[in-house]
Length: 546
Image (cartoon, rainbow, N blue to C red):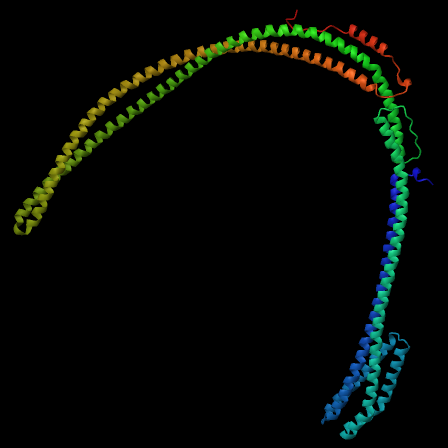
């Protein structure tokens, strides 16, 4: 099957799918084999570790049993001997249980041979052990020690040799498990490298085939696009296949046909555009002349109205300024009246306070008079007392002098207060007169302010009316200027359109198309455009044109 019949996305998906499938297969194989190797390694290590632990337990029980046997011979007490005997029996039982567990794990020939040897040694040790126990409990220590040294210890040494062999075998088994794991990892790595090489070769081959199936059609499409860019529209495009590049070539073929049709129609319309643009330019020139005359007249009228508006605005501004000054004067006069009223009130308060001070001075004067009388009486009483009242007489004389001085000062203050009260009364009368005068001034200023407000309102109304007329004239002038600008723009646009039509006609002539796409002659298009211009309505000129 040709790759050109498949879409590019399908091809790429198929190629990448093959590579991804191979990578997934490699990863799956790696995971499965790694899991299997890891499980085998863990199982082997666990088995070897269990066997090593049981062998160590057997060795420990054997060594501790020998020590316990010697401890029995060292005891002199029967109870202590029984205790050590029980310990030896427990260790022998531990030895037997560990051996049985080791047998249950599954052993090879060498391990079974070692365990058979241990079983034989255990059986051969049983009779000497019992004999040694009997001799020890009979307190025949020398014979018991001889029994242990000559018969039990050699058997224990043989058992230790066998146990060490078993331990060495377990260590060797552990190393074998680790070596097998390393070999499996190396084999897995080689397998992954092989799969990677295969995936690389397959991907490279498919990539080469896919690239070749895409590049050549793209070159054909580029060749077609360059011929279109050069103006060669009469070429034919061959399309084969169903992929995206084939669809691109098909679209280029349709585009080439559409361009031929469009260029043919543009050629037919270029002449019509040129004639229409010349007619439009001529009409716009006439309209532009009349619009300029109307704009000049409106500008003169607008200038006159602008001057009149300025004068009226100046009058209104002067009236507003005068009104503002009158209002300010009215406010100042009103404030002056308020201040005068406050002064009148203040003067009345001063007058009332002065009267109160006069009353207080009268009280002080009366107190001074009473004090003088009391001092005089005290001096008389001191004179009667003779030598004993001399000091009191001096004090009474000083008090009398102070009372007289206080009375004199009170009289002076009273005179001053009386003079101040007279002056305050005179000032109050003058202030009352000033307040009446300020009221008259305020009333006059208020009347002037009312008159100025009426003048200002009239000036503003006149200014508003003139500004309304000025705005209307300005709008007319603006509209006329806009019409003139639009006419000029239309003239420029017509000239530009004429130039562009010439450029377009020259540009379109560069394209090479089949003659079948020219459907209408230029002369027919020109006649159609002239009929359209003659049947169109005349232009409507703005107000004031002639």
